[in-house]
Structure formats: C-alpha cells, structure tokens
Length: 193
Image (cartoon, rainbow, N blue to C red; front, top):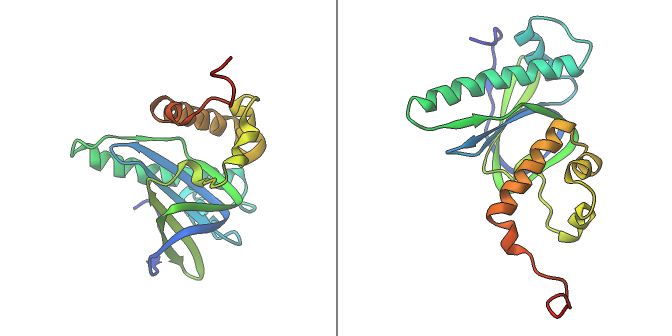
C-alpha cells in the first residue's frame, strides 16, 4: 500500500465542468489518452501529501503539491506497467498542478469522491479530455495567440509554467501537423495577390 490511512469511495459523478481549488494532474498518452487528477478544497489534499511523504506541510504549498504529484505518478506508473504487460503502451507525462480554475470538457469525465475521515479528495478521471481541460467554443478568443510565440501566450493567457507551455506548444504542433493545417483558409484577397 502506498497510503497508510483508511478511506472509502463515494458515489461516482459524471460531469462536464469541475471547479478546481487545488489539483495535481497527470496525463497518459498513447494507446489511450487519459487524464487523472486529485483535487481538494480547504487543504484537504494535505491528507494525501502528508500521508504519502510522511511529513507535515504548512498548507498546500509547492512541497505538498510535489508530494501529491509524486503519489499520482506512482499510481499511474503501476497502471501503465500493468497495461504494458498486455502490450498496451502509455507514455506518462510530467505531473503538474492547477489552482483556482474551471476544468471543462464537451465530453463527460468522472469524479470519484474519496473520503479520509472527514476530508474529501476527488479523483478526476477523463478519457480523451481536451488537453489541459481548456475548451474554447469562441474562436475569437484564440486570435490573441496569433503573432507572439505560443509558449509566451500559453503562459500569459492560461498561467502555464515554462514546462507546461513547452508541452502545450508541442501538442499544438502535433494537432496542426495532422489536422490543423487543413482547417485554415487564406485571408480574403490573398489568392488574387
């Protein structure tokens, strides 16, 4: 066992939107694209961080988030190892964390409440969730990305760290290479020029 504390599962919910106060997440890519995160309110993530790291934290700070993300990494590593024995390959991405944002998807994702005594921590799992849970239905919101380097825009408009911005830029290029290039059209008057 990785956690040495009793817990029980609550009723699974399907949602398309989820309010994040504090969440450690990790994506798995390959034969299946998966997103797994642990989320909590009011310092509830400390029950995972402190039990896994076997130390006390002053609150949900960088060290506590590191412990939560390392816990998620261990769980996903065991999951990916199990699948590799069945010839299903998954790449485990670097875990990251989010605070005070809304996770949304046009596809449903699952929220599984985990109860540790009186503290609730949610396990959020999605299959084929849009990268980083960002879904823009208004294309005009993306126009601000035209011009400046993408990694700068991801940092400025979505608060991504340098590593997250690099990864998001790689996702964009992956999408553009296969699909995005065919979704563009020339500005009016350009063909005549």
